[in-house]
Length: 135
Image 1: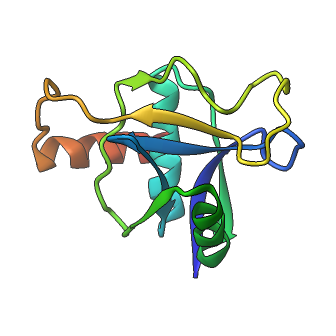
Image 2: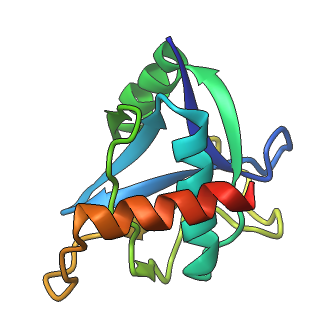
C-alpha cells in the first residue's frame, strides 16, 4: 500500500525520517492521505521544526525499516487526527547539516503533554480547511 511519510533532506545521503516519541519508543506516522501528510508537515513547520518533505513510499518498506530500527509505526487514515507535538527533542539522531552518517537518521518529536487542551472537531475542521487553502 502506498503511504506518505515526512522526510528531511529527501533523496540525499543525509536523509532523515520524522518520528514521534511515545513514552520511550519512536513511532513513524504513515499517512494514507497526501493532503493530511502535507497539513501535518505545515503544522510542524509552524512549530519551528525543520521543514519536512512529504514522500510517497510503500508501507512495507517503512514497516521493514521500523522492524530493523526497533521503531513502532502507525497508519493514519484519511482525515485521521494526529496531535502536532509542542516541542522538539533537544538531541536527535539526525543532523540537518549532514554531520551524521548513521543509516537510521530520525528526528523525533514528543506529543505527550498533559497540559495541551482538546480542540473541538469543528475548530480542527476549520484549521484543516484553511491549511488546505494554502496548498
